[in-house]
Image (cartoon, rainbow over all chains, first blue to last red; front, side, top):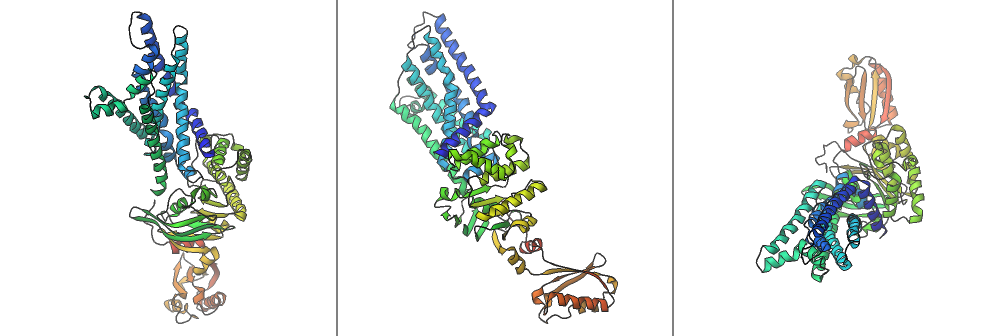
Length: 248
Length: 325
């Protein structure tokens, strides 16, 4: 546990000591802030608008920008996790230390999760601002963040796995972006295919559908199991890959 | 303290290390020697737990590295060849982090870091970012990292690479001091370093162990001596006199005096294998000089030296290596 916490703290310091995390933060807040402002403005300037959802549901569940921010935030945050260690050779120091591969992988992964959460933290201000002019359903806010965190955790895990597969940060970024893009494209299949296995499969992995559900205050076991699997399988594989370096 | 049995590493069809067996006890500094690509770094990386062997066993301070990896790795300090560090971290923070993952208790960490930095003479860089350190300082911070937690086994890959002469002397003194309570295995290309601080040497060539023993034993196994005679008139060195140079040798000792040659104008060089001489080296040389003086060649100086480790190394590894992992 000491090694895990030490790795987590080092990774956090390393992420936030470089400009990368700050640039990501700025970009994310600019995009999400702009999207939220335009949604609220749209609702305010069209009082006759009759929709099933309010501005918060529209922001968390229907805006295409939330899944798109996953596409640049998760791969960029996770690309250096192991690729950089292997490129610079510092991985030798880790492998020769009395620490397990699982502790190293989990330490790095938890640091990414904390950073991801910090990136999204300021968006909590949006419902707080909205509260001054309208009633806010806090349950919707809470479940929306559960959905965002669940998907983010899964995509960061995929990013960590991609980072173990190459010494190049850029290649790691391309790999994990490709996988995430595949999920987004598969999600579109939910509305393309007729009812059947393919449609059910695409619906199961659709990011937008999950975000829409959680934005309506629904947290289903099926979605949560999907998110946990999306995190656990890549992290397990990452541990195996790191262990396998000793035998390559 | 370090026991290696039948250590073998294959990279595909290439055998990088082949059935290497040796032991390093507490109180000894063993130099790991070999030409480039001989398998030294691969061997050290396997001992450090960075690479797994294809066959063989490694025991570190009584713990099997494959069966109890965490326990074994807790007993070793490893300085890798390039001493890689995290450039964005300050030296003190880096070593505190390393102390934490090496299991040093939180209360002990500041002292452990200070002691390690002090022993490697880099206390003054504790607040400097690693990216701003010179090559020499990086090397010493890497060494300080290896010394954290006072491990009983030290594996040092080129510990003095990149250091200036004063730093080299200090690091050598430090390693010699550390020897008292540790088993130290160091890889180096600098044979003078091995002669200066090592008590034993392991020579690897093309992945195979070709010699292991104390430096005296290694020299004894190759007890040839270089003899250089400075002669006054090499033109008088006729074939008949050259034949006389074999004078005083046993009939079966053809190699006792081999390849007499005249080079550099006036210097006559010999390689002499004393064990094949019938008498002592001194008396044989005396007789040799007498022959040369009597024949009018004249002798102005005699220089006899036992073979340097460099020569022994060259003889052991005369073939060109074929693989550099």
